[in-house]
Every structure is written in C-alpha cells, then in structure tokens.
Image (tube, rainbow, N blue to C red; front, side, top):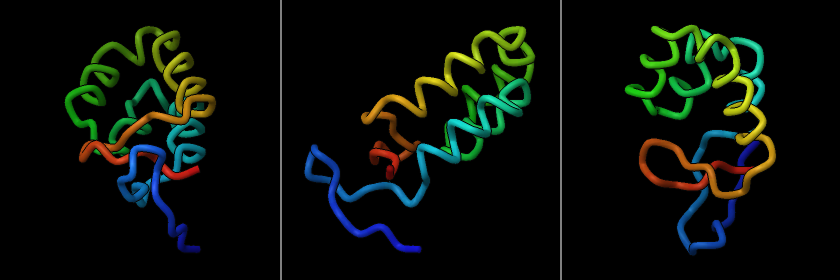
Length: 81
C-alpha cells in the first residue's frame, strides 16, 4: 500500500509508518526494535543496552510515536500516518 503525499513541512513522507514504529517500541522496545526500524541506530543501541530504560523509556517512546505527528526517520522525513 503506497501512501503518496507530503508532510506538513512540504517534504515527502517517509516509507516508514508511525503505527508500526510505535507498536514495535511498545512490545519489543527493550531491544530498540522500533528505533532500528526508523533508522535511529545509535538510539536503538542505547535502548538495547539499557533494556529500553527498564521498559519505561521504550513505553513512553512508543506512545509518542503513536500520538505525535512530527516523528521522523533517520533521514528527517516525517513518518507516514
């Protein structure tokens, strides 16, 4: 399913989904999977080494992915809805 459109900042949307990133963070965020998915490797490794901040960091991060409209991938493109 292709999502064609532009983000509010005028750039094209990322091919990554904020729903997928959020759910990955909530369910397997202790391993940094949601951050690996969006390409933020450094943050993903930090989450992996801290078990997602004992689960709190990854839970909050997952909720923010799901509710925020300005989360980006590693290339600065807004995640598609």
